[in-house]
Length: 232
Image (cartoon, rainbow, N blue to C red):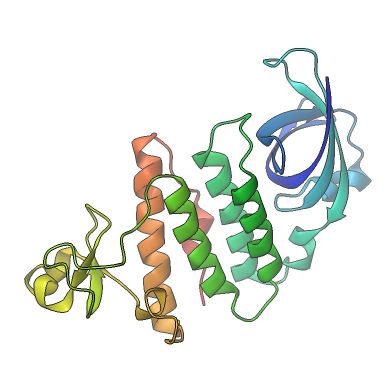
């Protein structure tokens, strides 16, 4: 069987002398891994994590390791190489995808939103887009946050906290006595007329990161160290 698809490289591992085991997230086939044989030193740049590639793979059985070839479409890793924050974001995106979803299932909606995010990493408001992508991903994982109303009183105003247990919003009044145990809810996430600030973006990254790690811990997984280095 043969597949032709587009995707991004989300993990790589050296395999024997001159081969690489590449894990990729593709439009029509989701997450899969394939072996690339006889990789020349001059071609190593093609296989950097985060690069967009055209994928050609062949295999006989579903449980057989795929033999793959990759053609570079866009070298995102080299473009972002001199920007530590954006590069860390790109690596984090790839790690979250690789750790969160099973193989051999198409996730076209997630793929398209991820491609939009990666393209947006080159823009000024990339960090706000990144945070909203993590919120979207949590929803797709079944861990969506409820930001519509207070979990205690049901009111829709003055929502400034999130319960780390339920993922539901809490108002200032109801959360006051528990605020040391609650997470901050940045206003820009619930009010589109409010612009994100440096401080609110830090709060947002802490918020989404908490729930992504909570999801991964249930599956005995954790994000690598560079996820802590998405700074502003």
